[in-house]
Image (cartoon, rainbow, N blue to C red; front, side, top):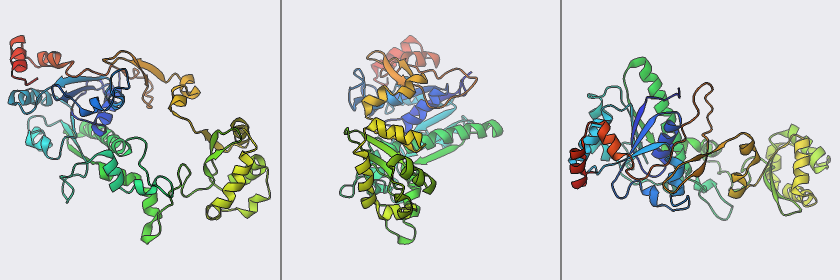
Length: 391
């Protein structure tokens, strides 16, 4: 069986942080019921239509889920949700601050009727403090946590090219839910989990934080190169292609000078990473000069022979056809409202269990009637709920 087979996850989610958490729980075999607003749904559904009519963010974070359309402003819809959470193992939500509690969906309200439930609340800034009520989106948290200040070029700070703050929060929510379920196995009781996007992103800022301890200057923005290790970044070859290489310590530096640059006289002149950093402009010119005499394939051949770490500066088109992903059979297909889509298997490998379900991306409200029937609602009840616009 899959690790979370038999677990019921109910989620009041939108955008990325909570959906990324719950999709990973679905990957482990949990049943995930996504509660969405009728007619609109998770607003990430409307971000774009690049994936055969569906939004790219939504497809990424919502496979293998069931969609239940409920208007939670309607008391009959809230009664449906109450029935559902009373039998749930986990409730995950990233609604506006305080919204879940006002509907009686906080852990304190649910525990008396479902003492085993784990409630995971994801917010921008967490409970308490002057920022509790502030709206929070990914770029805002990247900025608040200082990530943007250390990313980009010397002339221009930059955000990450993906939703890194949402991903950080989603990953901590995912691992925290798993830990809470393990603890429940020992105690028999659930608990409340609280995940703050700011705190998750701030944890990921550990290197630049300690780098600036006691008021020291921050790491310089170095584009695609490493700010504190050199040479570590992209170099342009004679055929115009770029190769990313990484020299981590002086043993590798010696090998790099002897076998890759074929300039052994540089070894002693640039010993020590701090020394290389201080002279990175001059040293970079020397390395670029050698790279300009080689094609990317020739440089990679030298680097591989010297066992110096390197990689291609790939674009999305390259990732779609990456030979390592293909060789390991990491691609499959999933269904969606617009038809079949390619999908990567999740990174985890659980030996001895069934493979991840890789179920379809649901249409809005696709499973509403089936879930209501499961909860004991008859055809007349469902028709009334639909007439009252509760579903």
